[in-house]
Each structure stands twice: as C-alpha cells, then as structure tokens.
Image (tube, rainbow, N blue to C red; front, side, top):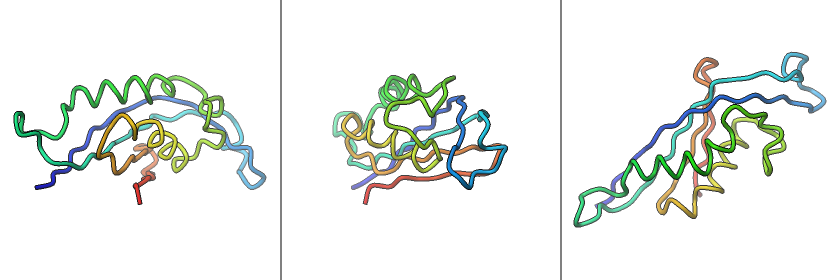
Length: 122
C-alpha cells in the first residue's frame, strides 16, 4: 500500500537574470513571494499509520531550504548560480533527498505570476 503526502512551504527572495536575452526588467534585482511543495511516497508506518511526521518534514524543509533562501538574494546562494524556478526546484531536491526518504518531487512556484516548475525524481 503506497501513499503520497505533500508539505507546502513559502519564502520571500530576490533574484536577477544576467543572460544575454533577459529583458531589462529581469536583469534588475527584483523579488517574489515563492511557494514550494515536497511530495513523498511511501508505506505507512505500522505503529502510526502515517508515512512520515509532517511536523518533522516541515522542520527539515525549514532548516535545509527556507533558512538558506528566505529574504536573500538567490544569485548569492551557493550552488544556485541561475535562480530560475527549475533550478531552485533542483537545488532544493538535491539538498532534501537524503533527509526525506521517499522524496519524489519538489515544486517551486510564484503564485502571483501563475508560474511553477517541478523537479521529479526520474
């Protein structure tokens, strides 16, 4: 029996793009309210009936991802030189995977823009 659980998180951050075809607006430092979601698949623990404690998942996300990104300049984050949605999702996945067994997907979005990207374990 497999279940899928998801935990949402948010952070505020700024970034800019310096590639040659970025328009002038995006070349300037600008900020967004970002939303994230992790998806974990697994069997429920016999003694508890859940895959993982969602409170503990939240703490891991806060410690490993949110604390590094929130109210910062994403271009300055180690390992995240091109802070597009796709790269933020991959960055978060790579840091969370060893701490969250069964992690299958990290999604990062900018809700006010109606944009999102997902990194899914293949």
